Image (cartoon, rainbow, N blue to C red; front, side, top):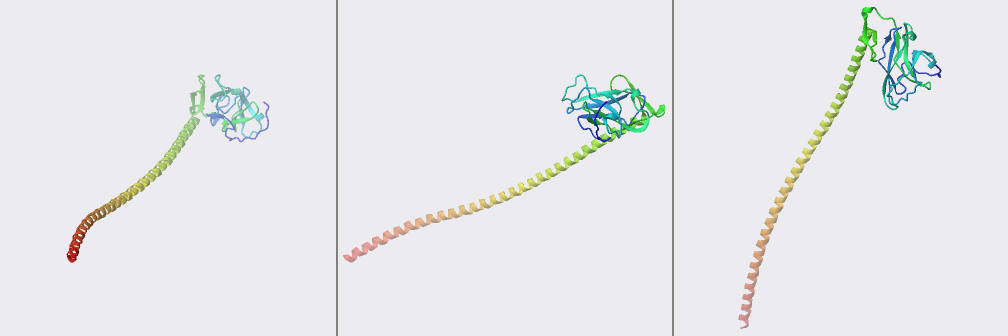
Length: 255
């Protein structure tokens, strides 16, 4: 398999839309191995894409130990996510050792699109420590897996679930704090509205009181005006009487 020199860390995250799933910490040599991965909507799959098993620390895509061609479902369409699985034949797998390996997805152009967490190939523990489980590919294949690996997988799943629950709890706490602060703001707004209401009521009472006083003053002025008009009429009558008497007096004087 030809390819160019690349420099990708063994622990590097996926560089494109390919994600490896269910990668075990170790695999049994001389046993058929399944590799599960997902082609996300961002990945453009090609028939010459391939998946290799590399010893951690590799520096070129030519440093693979073995490889298989990447497969996609018959119903695969570009731009859609697809779950895929390939199998590595037992005779091509590395022998048992402490050396770490990893899956690498290499595109048809020789670009490394994704790499998996490291794993090893080791001889299984005694038989009583092994468990037989059904494969995930649906072909009725039985896998022999160390019990500790299953326990480790369950532990990791529980830890992931716990981390998810803690994250949900933290998010709930943040939402609760935000809602509490919002409630306090609303309460402060209600208090300000009540204070404004009391102020307006007091102002209204003062206006009504002033209105009463003005009305009383107006009524008093109206009454005084009526009295003044009556007094003016009386004075006018008195003036008429006086004028008549003066006229009579002058007439008498003239006579």
